[in-house]
Amino acid sequence: MRRQSRCARKSDYERQNSRTPESLQTGASTALKEEQPRVNDTGEGAGRGSLLAQPRLVERLEDCYFYHTMDVPGFGLVRGHWDLRGRFDDYVGGVGVSGKTVLDVGAATGFLSFEAERHGASRVLSFDMSDVRQQAFVPFKDKLYYRDYESWAYHHNLIVEKWKNAYWLCHRLLGSKAEAYYGNIYALPPELGEFDVSIVGAVLEHLSDQVTALASIARLTRETLVLVTPLIHTEERVARFEPRADRPEHDFTWWTYSVGLYREILAILGFRIAKVGYSNYYHDYEGRFEERPTLVAVRD
Ligand SMILES: C[S@@+](CC[C@H](N)C(=O)[O-])C[C@H]1O[C@@H](n2cnc3c(N)ncnc32)[C@H](O)[C@@H]1O
Image (tube, rainbow, N blue to C red; front, side, top):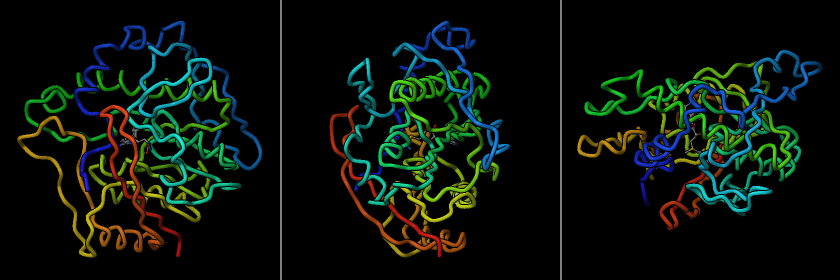
């Protein structure tokens, strides 16, 4: 099984960064306006409205960076890194979301959020980081992250803003009603409410501390956790440290956990593994298929 990260390679980040328009650095672009919030701050979700991100009016593809390959009304097929079109059911391990509330952790372009809606989810919340400082990179000594953290944060933020712009462009053109929250994965606020299903796709391997993040997500999860992440196939409770000193380009993948380790952590959090499945997905950027495991855990 391949162990490569599903996130964009560093060279992609750098390429994107060099193409980031100046206007995005100030948020002053005429193509990017804050829309009036569409959230309702009354009723069951009272108090939640103020936490939610305000929709952005994004009109140009050049202001966006697509992680997911998307069919965007008015623009046609826009290629991203991963083409999950038609693969939602496999990706979420066959977990039904019709009539369920869904938390999409690390939404990126939002493909999984929009698909959850299309599959009948009653409420979808797309979550992503509010500040790039919440994403720890591996501190290779010659990289900007290590040498000049503030410059790194500034440049990386430009890229992450383009990821968010792609989400909002698709959100508007697909007529999505998904809500978005930008915050800290290690401390998701209870005011967001509880979710029947939480989908954590290709996020855990990029975190320096998976356990704290899983606890934060589990606290908001009523029934089912879907974890799409590389796995070591043993019941031993072990984790493999992925960074290698001679491969500084791989600075955003930290740990691969074993099935046994997830089993233990999930039991600590009150969940048990119901299913582990494998499927191949198309890595559009590299033009090949790659196998990904999906682990489904349910509340005990
Ligand atoms: C590789 S993409 C996965 C996108 C989608 N979940 C999927 O499975 O196709 C990783 C996502 O996790 C988010 N992410 C990575 N580290 C994060 C952190 N520390 N806090 C919050 N979000 C994070 C990224 O911003 C991005 O949206």
